[in-house]
Each structure stands twice: as C-alpha cells, then as structure tokens.
Image (spheres, rainbow, N blue to C red):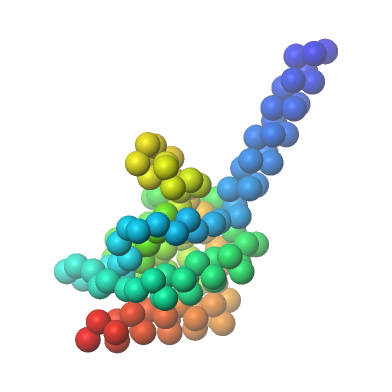
Length: 137
C-alpha cells in the first residue's frame, strides 16, 4: 500500500514538473544575441531581446513538447540569453534552459517546446526579424 501511494505521489510530482516546463521563461544573461542568417549571424541588441522575452512571458499557454529533431538549421533562428527560437511558418520552436547555471553545468538539459503561431503572432515575429535585419544594414 505504501509503495503504491509513493508511486502515485511520484507520478503526480513528475506530471506537475513536466507541465511547468511547458511554461517557458527567459533568464536574462550577458551572452550573445544573434539572428542566424545564411553565412553567419546578425547581432541584435538588448531592446530587441527584451521584446522577445516580453512576448514569451505573455504567451505562456499553447505550448507542446518538442524535440531537438524538430529544429531545421535552414529556418529563421534567434539565440539570446537562455534560449534559441526557430520560426518555421506558423510553428515556433523554443529551446531553453530552466536555470542559467544549466547552460554551463548541464548543457544537455535544455527543454524544447513548440506552439502554433496565430496570424498576429506571425506578423509580430516577421516585423521583429525585419527590424533586426534592417538595423544591421
């Protein structure tokens, strides 16, 4: 009986932790902020990184478990702070570290989630990426 209760408690805690991982967060750190483009990358500034972090904070629902295999290097990707984002049409992949220390201490502990972007969301990301590209020229 005790073992069964312990098992149920463990499963419940695991499910709660897993559900929490579907609520992404951005940890601000001093790392590079890059938009990857063919042949290299474009640096972007902290104001643009803040817009990304704000969008992530405001869009906590609708995420599903993703996989690193979902990433396609030929698609639009942004990297900053504790995350990498890939925009592929109406799908957004978000690869992040739960804790800043994980980036150094446990680099394989990243979490990959994904969501479908609404037309308004797609417009936001297209405009932001366009501003990053324009600020580079």
